[in-house]
Length: 315
Image 1 (cartoon, rainbow, N blue to C red):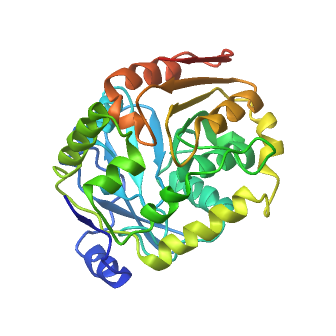
Image 2: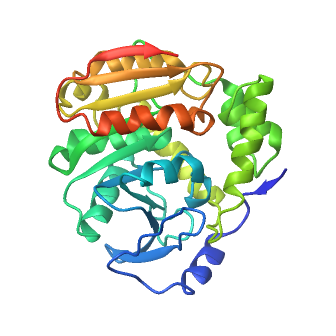
Image 3: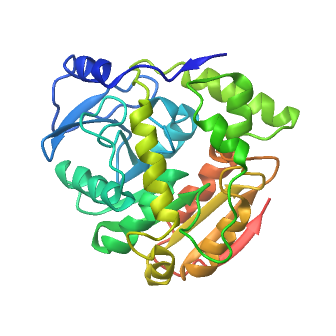
């Protein structure tokens, strides 16, 4: 199976014109059928989808991630209890603008987007690169965050930082992903994980209103921003983790080639009110492989109030 990452920003702008700006947002019952909507934020057209009803939870995407990459099985399971909001940051997918080279700016943009939708407080779920932005939202905009979920991600630079497998970086930047790339990047090498990868790809291919891929310029800017984040160039966000007071759920696969599990343990150690879950035979996309097991954990966390959740365990 091949998935192209070659559509251009010009294609994105042309296709944006096909969708009117929509506010208030229209919520769908299924992410497969959800339509892409647009809202003006700081002069830019921001693409987003809304699934479900209830308190808002805003999803922050991975490296090169768009609206196409969120597993409908995972999204819809969460949307049975919450209003799930997926969006493309500026310069990503069908959103206009340019991808910022600052993770701090990504965090600001996410909060601005939420405010544009009339959302003053939300729960934020950050997967992979999105987890870096989620940490910064909690640090720089604590008044905007009720709870935080950090999935398959890690902190900024610190003495215990575990770097990614170099092969992950080279595969993640390929113009076109083959099935083997998807399995290496997001699943593990076992036959069980291979089957989970195939099931995930079948589900995302069912999405009806398709997004467009991130351009090479866009993901090069993402790479630059993450390099600065890991080097603590904008701010020492690692030292600031101790200042996050809200409840935080951290989770990962035991064999993540992008953010090795050690990084999840470091997050759990540094964030006072946090809980860590690790899943076996799983990698960077554990949330899709183990969606039937992980979503109940996620929902229990979100409904648990603000009591301390400090814990660490694995399946």
